[in-house]
Image 1: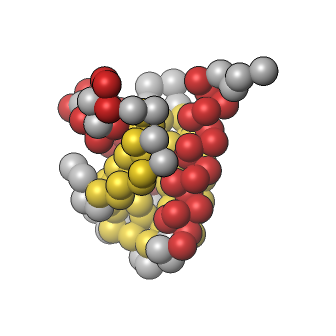
Image 2: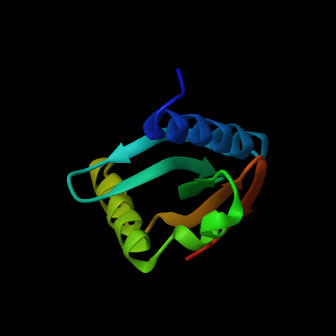
Image 3: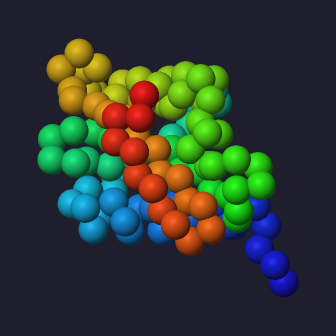
Length: 116
């Protein structure tokens, strides 16, 4: 039975998480969600909290996955970051944060630090 989009997305997020761990990140959460916002991965890279969006495309017929991180999506990830920091008693003004994107095109993974 073929996997559905949610299962495929979860699998690709785990691949991205393993990649980030290899780069030294400590994964804190997968799929952090609030009613209004979400972040696919939250990790610590040294003392920096990294909120990572993961986008997958089987092929480039609908464009590169990195192009799918629209300004609206970026806004939702920023909101998720604020919720996460508040929920963990971390000050947005005193905490280092970064927004990354991992694009997976077929089997090729691209990681963009400080994407927005």
